[in-house]
Length: 352
Image (cartoon, rainbow, N blue to C red):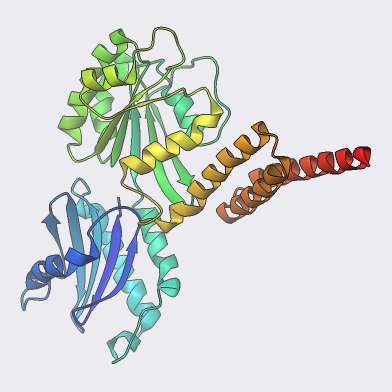
């Protein structure tokens, strides 16, 4: 997963873009000095990597100038996957700016370069894997994230499904694996390269005990991946309490009810939390979280009989939907706003 992009020109930080938590700018200069010793040495390679705690810095240099382009990813990201994107970025950067970046006083305008960097991020988008045994709600959760119709009857997933999803303006790979025992020989291969793994359980002691197998598998196959347990079916009478599940599984656990379409914002927040993403470090996520918060406020306004406030909130939500590219959802909220406005106007006429 691409977490950050840095451009250093003549030993000065000329550009930075963050998609998730990574290196703090206050320590970047010290880390860069260590990278520079190798990257810009007389016989240094054009490309290479440097590991710093839980992050991997992949770099590429330009031999004609004191230019270093750096990508910050997780330790589990393979350099063979990152290197082609580094070379592509360098080529596009040089073609875009020509000889300008070698001149004194050159300054990078972020708004101009951001679209190129966003394309690189899409090519190095995070891989999120949902694992668990059959019938625990993996496919239901996948469809919830994708905003598809939620299946009320369990249909076993055959081998697995892979989808590219968008959360806000960010792109992700979402892998949903078959949970039947006959496919267990594929599980380790499928989860390789995952940035985050969600272990789905049905919150029963029997299933949780059995699911501890996946904890061991993840630790073995993707030791650097972010990991959490999703305790699904918390609405059932035999569901264990979250604190008991967390103690049993020895990992962060989130309670969940996947068949409730209103829980999509909660799952999005779980993914953002797991990948260390928030609106401060990832502005592309901001409109989405703003929309989810406004939706909560609108629901409370309706429940409290504050209809004029609800109209305003629905209009704001519709505008955010348009910004996020959800045209059909934008129209839905606009229609809700119009209907309530008409209702208020009708009531006003009746009173007069």
